[in-house]
Structures are given as C-alpha cells and as structure tokens.
Image (cartoon, rainbow, N blue to C red; front, side, top):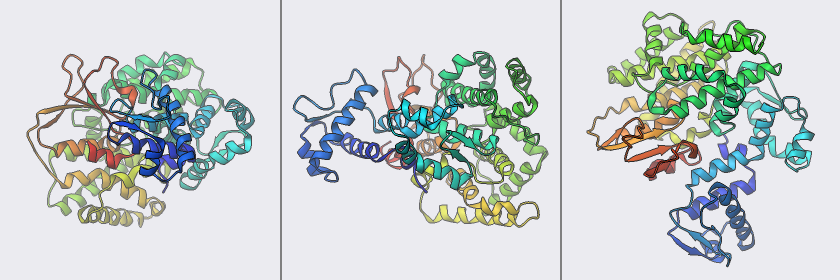
Length: 481
C-alpha cells in the first residue's frame, strides 16, 4: 500500500521533504553543503546543493518573513524558527502536480489534458507520467478511473464524490474559501449544521468540511455530474436543515433534487465523525441504535456484543457509545457502496497501528466476526471488503482495551480534521499522559498548547505554543509530542 507522499509527490519533491525533515531535526547552527552531505550522504554534493536551494525557494513562499534558509555563502541556517516538517509537507502536497490536476478537474469540468499541461508549463506526456501513481491507485483500489485525456473522473458519481470528500480534501485538495465565495447561500445552512458536531474540533474545521461537501456537490451537479440513485441511505435524522438544502438546490436549478439532497446528508454525516457523547449527532445515532431501526444498527449491536464478550464487559459508557456510533456511521457507506471506501486511513494506517499481540488479537476477533457475516446470503460481497473494514474497526476500538484514568492539568486544545481516525492518535496519546486535559479552544481563556493538523488552523492572534501533528510522519510526530 503506498503512502500519501508516494501518490502526490514526484522524486524531487520527496527528496526535498526527506532532506528538510532531517535538517529540521538537526541542532541549531550553520551547516555547509559538504557537512550536510557527510551527515545525509544519500544525494551527493551537487544534488544536495540543488535541493537546499529548491527548499529555500519553497520556504520563502511558506514563510515570506522568515530569515533565508540558504545564506549568501550557500550555507544552510538551521534554527527553531523554521516551519515544522508537516507544514512543508502540506505545502509540497498542495503544490504538487497531482493535486493541481485534481483541483483542475473539479473547477474545469470541460478542460482537457492539453489545456492543463499548458497551464503548468509541462508536456502532456510528462503530466500523464506524473499522474500515473494516483490514477493507478484510484482505479486498482476503488474502481474510480480518470480519463486522462479529458481529465474527468469516470465511475459511480456518489463514489467519486465520496472519494473527493474523504481522501482528496483531507490530503489538502481545496479549502472552504472557494465555495463560500461561489455559494454564499450555503453559509447559513453550514452554521446550523455545525452545531451537530463536536465543538472541540473547532468551528473553522467543521465549517470547512461542511462547505466543501456541499460546495463540491453543487458544483458537480451544476456541471452535469448528477447523483441519480434513489436508494441512498437516509442520514438526515429528520433534521430541518434537509429542507434548507433542498431550497438551495432548487434555487440553483439542480436536477434530481431528491437524490442530491439524500446524498448530501449521506456525505455530511457518514464516517467516524462522532468525537464525544456531547455531540448532537451522537444522540441522534444512539436513538437509531436503541431502536435497531435498520440492518446497520443490528450489525453494530452484534459486533458490540461480540467485543464486549471478548473484553469481559463493556468499557466506560462514554467511550463505548462513541465507538458504536462511529461504527454505525462507517457501516452505512461500506454497505451502500459494497466495496472498500476511498478514504485517507489506508494510506496512513501503517504509521498509526501498533504492532503488538493485543492489537493483533483484537484484529483477529473483528475479522472473524465479519468473515462470519460475509457468509450470509446477502453479504457475499463483504469478502472483498473484509480487510479494510477490519483495519478501520480495529483501530477504532483499540483504545477501549486500555481503560485509563488520570488527573489532568496541562490544558491542550486540538484543531484537527473532523474525523475520529485522524484525531485518535493525538487523543489516545494525551489520555495516557498524566496531568493533561483536552479543552475546547477559547481565545478568552487560551490553552497551554495548541495542536493543529494544518497551518491554517492556527489563529492569527495566537502567540502560544503550537505543535503541528500531521499525515506525513504520524508515528514520529507521536513520539515527539
């Protein structure tokens, strides 16, 4: 399984990232290129000199007011003011050819490979060659093809959109600013929908997620990429915002409004988006689980019983109900698409999952449960999805094996993606460190430490400690944190 860098960065960008990450960890000081070559001798002096100048040019864009990375003598200056490696990684991803091509496909549905190649000053064959890793990955893993000549996604429109929302956007494809300008009528709906999610995620994170989901849906529908399926599971929970979305779509003359609105709710609320029992979405899901209102609720209850028996009882109420709510919201898209989900987690799983006996025991138990379900008459298709489903749920339930309670005093706020999977490595780590308390960010009562997954989540007036925890090196970031 490739990682994020393999799919989006070419060799030069990967070399820049690896070199900068290594240099960023060096002791403060000034280093000659030959000294760096002696320490990091993978490139040779000539190649290394070229890389440090390229990095210097990039950093001038990332931090325009920062002191020069390469001085007048060609030496490299290292100090603690350099951007975190994760900040540089996200810059490289957003500036990569693959990400530019994906953004071009979203915003220029009538564009061609020739027009895009001209816009990035590359030959058509160079563009096709550099896009090949991502094109092959989406096709082989999820059956989503990219018509490279026409630069369009080919496949089930619901699956294509789900991939955009849950893989490309989490990697850094686009931000909410584009859609706030294009579709201002979405802002009141987004403000209301945001109250159903966890406040600790941060209003900016929630708003970005909701705006991108609704904005991309509107944009693709307007350009003729319509959702027509009338069997999409209902995840609107009878919320009044459903009618507000329908009115927005009607005002934009979107066809197939009923199917589009159904998919909007499906995209907004599916996946591991429940972070705590205080979330309003948590109570909505728990009501469905209590009624066993649909097949996914019944399967969630079956899995819960299996795991509780294995653990000798249910873990603490709060953690357990959050895990079950997320399980339910993950099963719905898996059973709807009947294939592995195009999400970010498989690309970073190996960095996050512990390799120990207890984790593997839990994984075997969950896999055995789903293999048993896959033998049922209407679930044969699960055989092709068991691996991903097992990995997603094992990582979700793993912390429940280690009940731990401490007195917390260090006040920490998180501004990370609206995803239980993305937040879990940090949350799980902090819960196991004595004297740590996670609190919502409040500018009037700032925390001792702010942990963010992207530079844009740092408030402009923030002058305290900040730690960038991200996707490029989740395992080492955890150790450093």
